[in-house]
Length: 334
Image 1 (cartoon, rainbow, N blue to C red):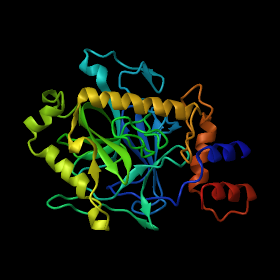
Image 2 (image 1 turned 120 degrees about the horizontal axis):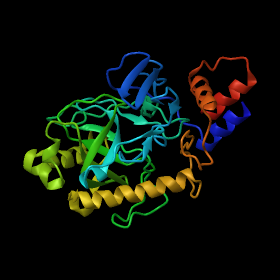
Image 3 (image 1 turned 135 degrees about the vertical axis):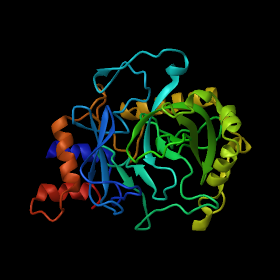
Image 4 (image 1 turned 90 degrees about the horizontal axis):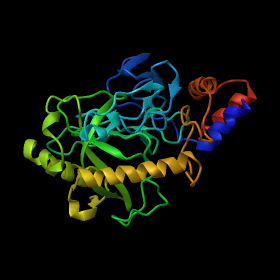
């Protein structure tokens, strides 16, 4: 138990559990060949969690253990195919948090052990984004790139603002509506620099490589060419989506100009380096929980047995007689 308590302390307590915002069944759910998801708690409730497992059935952190690049030498110990050309050198894993046309704000719980997906809670209530006319919910499949982190203590040279303390966000523009917890391969097309309450909040524009139209898209100009109006709608959505909550319009760096793929890849590279420093304890991660199973030289690495115990302890009933279990719930902020 003492080892588990140390793991919980390294990431600091998370706020109250969060919820779901997508349709979801119960129990184990297949996400992709190499990854599976497991639901705990009730959907659309503050105790809902979506945990990730690798192909061998072991719990992992989607934030830390899923590789950033598709062409990594191996994923979960399984060698991957070599890239066929330069374009395939730039394929990335994307974790889908919010399916298109849904409103529930689902996100990776960066402050909880193993970083499951949960629903964001604000002022004690589950958060749902407002519909921005004429759209319903999020207008893309929305998610994040693993093994990236926008450091809140490092000022971005191009925006002159500090990072937002999260993995970098992705707007996937393909034709399919994806599921919460899916892990897909995406091509990066460009990037938008949102300034959200004074923080840099990069928004990558990408497309699922398995989309029927993916072969048409190589850079940001192709989005306007083959999906005219989509970039303008994206800009307007991010500008206005907090206004119904009584907040001012969001601002953008570069006057709202979308930057191209080359620029986006440099931003990804920078956020990946920040994540590496975080996992190696070379910077102050604050409340971020860095517990992982596959980063061999990380001081936050845990065993498979510890990971299983963490999942059970996080979501078991807090009304236990054991003093040690009460300590665990204390560290989780319960």
